[in-house]
Length: 276
Image (cartoon, rainbow, N blue to C red; front, side):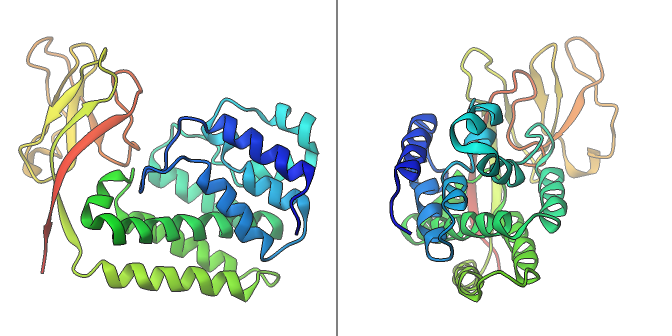
């Protein structure tokens, strides 16, 4: 597939929409990802719409760009493909979002599955490169534990394998990177969280972690949070020491690192220790 004016227009738009965004694993400009997805797709299809959808696959999910805007410029087919690989509700917990995504992927068309496969392949390649370059520090960049992310990719791979039109080449490429990642992940490091804090300085919310679990309780009114011991996690009646109101429970990563006070992103400071 050659570079066409329409593909060029999609690359230019994606570069503009993703301007200022970075990849979590390696800090590279985000545009590296959609362009890489497009290059992967070019090895497996000559369908211009599929390649353009690959370039734009994160724009509706991660920017202010809308499906209506996309349809006016690139047509209904491209828009349908992008929407087909877009997570529907970013406010849901990480696990529920991924479960919903997998359920939807089962019934998606081959073109959508191919875009998804190219997306997952490049994500895995980026993860492997980050491990090789930064070692265990690379884990600090991801918004979910590595074992959860790899579980998700393996579940996607099962769906790709059941698509009779899917190229063996892209399936084998995904399997190869998963194998390399597994080799690097032995033994699995154990994470110890030191503290969390909201990245919005005006919010100022933060919690010091004194225990091994990844859960805290918080009071939204007082902007106060506390990490309790494991034997206290089942007690749902933790009370705020200031206003005496019942505090809510927050499990890290199940909430996708969103501040419970202002909905901005949470920064996590932790260390890793080898196990085994």
